[in-house]
Image: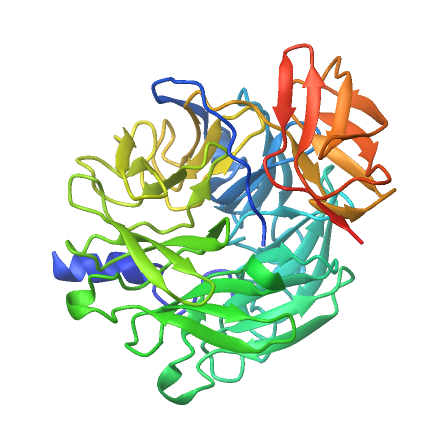
Amino acid sequence: MSKQQKSSRPVSWGVQAILASTVGVIWPVITAQSAQASFSTIYNFCALTNCTDGERANGALIQSSDGSLYGTTAAAGANESGTVFKITVDGSLTTLYSFCSEANCTDGFAPGTGLIQGSKGDFFGTTSQGGANGAGTVFKISPSGTLTTLHSFDTTDGEYPNGLVQGTNGEFYGTTSEGGTTGAGTVFKMTSDGELTTLYSFCSQTACVDGSYPNGLIHGPHGDYYGTTSDGGASNHGTVFKVTATGAETAIYSFCAQPNCTDGEYPYGGLVQGGSDLYGTTSAGGSGNFGTAFKVTSAGALKTLYSFIETDGASPQAALLRATNGDLYGSLFLGGTGDGTLFKLTPSGRFTKLHTFDGADGYRPGTPLSQDTNGDIYGTTSEGGANGGGTIFRLSLGIAPFVEAQPASAKAGAHVKILGSDLTGATSVTFDGTPATFTVVSASEISTSVPNGAASGVIEVITPNGTLKGNKTFTVKP
């Protein structure tokens, strides 16, 4: 496939629908300080000649142990094929890799999602196109920028991969948005050295009631994986599905089950877990046909939390963020009297618009937001900004800082990194109250081990500036 060829699948089912009609882990709640939303643009892409710094950033930014955020762009770069970059929280950007650096783009191009950090420190991601067979790749990249292509898709095992998640067994799980035995996408698992197994091909059931065109996975309740499909299902308007680690798939909810699709349709983003429930969005449908935010149980009982209206904005395209204050945050791709919006939604469904884009600060925010350990929220826009290539922005809401453990589960005695934003001078680290020995590596990293006798619970770090709690329950493996 040449660099000019693209998937026949529409970029956004939800946007098309709107334009045609008129887009297992329990998190402890960390108390937020009261503050007004403060928005700032920290980087404008295409700042360098010929946009060698990339444009059209996509996927959630991820914080690493060096305190920087890492991400990808889908276009531009040295070879006009997308990049991997890192950026400090004050806006200093470094391009780590430009795709299509190899002949015939065997290293892939156009990464369609962000990165995840593996348990050993390297980052993993996917390109939506290129590779040895032209159908996309899975790659590994070191924090210094050394890239290794782990797998090249060949259509039969999937096409256009769109994200990864690492399981507790150390293997990686993900989806392709097309390809497989029926062309409607797949679920796959892959070892860290690139051995890939196709677990499931969508549209394998009559009338595609199992869904088609999946949007990635999360590791959800009871060890299973959950995701959404943009199409298919009992009403052919998308699904929420569950798939086991061995590939048994079940569509637990089919959208447009209610009259006039008031429950939503075409979920183009993925899911996020909050307690035992899952949260997501649909890009269309709802009472005003501008999309919805919903909650669904692992058994498939769905509740519409909010139906977006025209003044809110329209067509959410990405998964929600569940922040450490317990609230949900997201973006609307269109409208809001401007070029998209940012919003907050409480778990009970109370909506607050936080920011309206005006083009100068970016427009069309269509990727998931992420939360830094300093408490602030970061995200990207695909276009606009000072140079037209999109932006990286920060949303400060007064949410308290926290710490994050990598990995989020381990046996007693296992090494654990604790990430934070102001760890210098830390005097205590405890796992559910059990003291641990530790070393402060830097202001953004502590090295420790799971202490003997520790139970699953919240990690706490005492610093000169106060006590920092972990953003998730740490699971001590037997």
